[in-house]
Image 1 (cartoon, protein in one colour):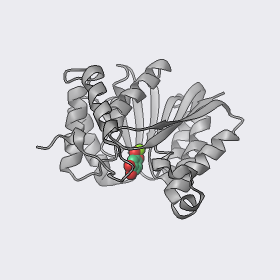
Image 2: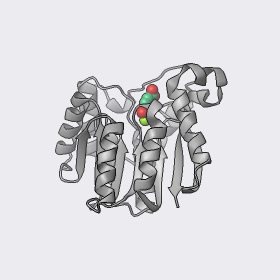
Image 3: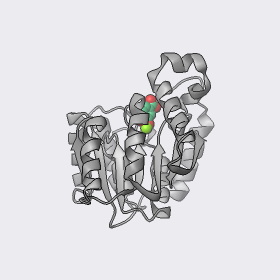
Image 4: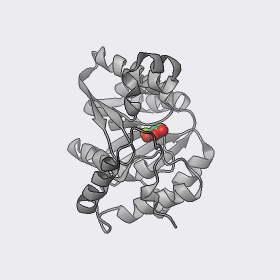
Length: 244
Ligand code: DHB
Ligand code: MG
């Protein structure tokens, strides 16, 4: 079987082979086979590939970056928008033995794949996959948080349909504890973020702009920043927001 780690979603002229070479080099040192959850993530990637899911999940090193963020926050309760095949959900849950992940997926087939991967990783008791559109499921979660039935989240990872970024962000901020983090994936989009004409035509780019603009004006935040990334998943970036 082909190595699912080498799958790449975008091969545009922007892609620089050094980015992948550096990811491979660093991965061999920071996250070699035998590392915690290496096998589980590899299995999840293979399952995603064999079931035809798009190869747009976080890279191994991006997944491990999420782990570092959760560990810095001492996160116990994590919310994710956009489960896909469960790769990032497994990463998030791997950040600690008592970390619980609630992840929302609109596509029943993807949810099925994710639940299989999660079961194979032995994490079914710590990762809950909810089926539905984020805009429908989030109000229910909000009710549970407001009613004291669920704790606020320490870390929220928004990685679903990009036009709804700002809706997910606005729903997430009040459910995030003080000094918790709301992180949004894919806000740079090979640099198209800064192209006015592209943003007008591409709702995904407009979705990235909208959430960055919302964060910049948001009095509910202590701070926010955006980091551009390159690597085997091409050129993109994360928005990171810390809640007051
Ligand atoms: C792509 C990457 C992502 O991480 C995502 O959530 C959606 C799309 C992409 O590379 O196209
Ligand atoms: Mg993404």
